[in-house]
Image (cartoon, rainbow, N blue to C red; front, side, top):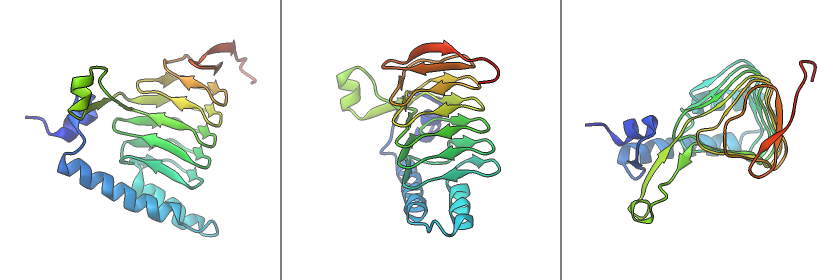
Length: 188
């Protein structure tokens, strides 16, 4: 029989109140408290805390605080990734970031979702869908990336966009729900 964690990671319905998951969220909250109170003048300490929190962080990772996430270990960051102030990543499933992903302030990335059926939702079942973001992506401030979204390389997400579906490489997207505003040339 699958554990609640195994169900969570595979995108099946699971109970977040499972003791193992509660403990893992508490671990993340403790690391987040240390990260969010870390001194700006001690960047090595901040990076060390970040590396304890996330599943993978390539070279030169940076997160401006405050930063929030569910578990941390489901976040995989490539090289030279940057999160600006006040970002939230609900990482009940995998969040894959390529290299040189720049994330503006107050961006929210959600893998967590809930059933549409009120009775199932009311019994505290939830699930998740992974998010994948390619390399050289810029996500403008206040954007929301919804569960199951995949963004190709060189995508630019306009500030405030609500991204509810996947997009190919080299496009500028914006709006609610986000749509392609234009295709980007190789030099953009």
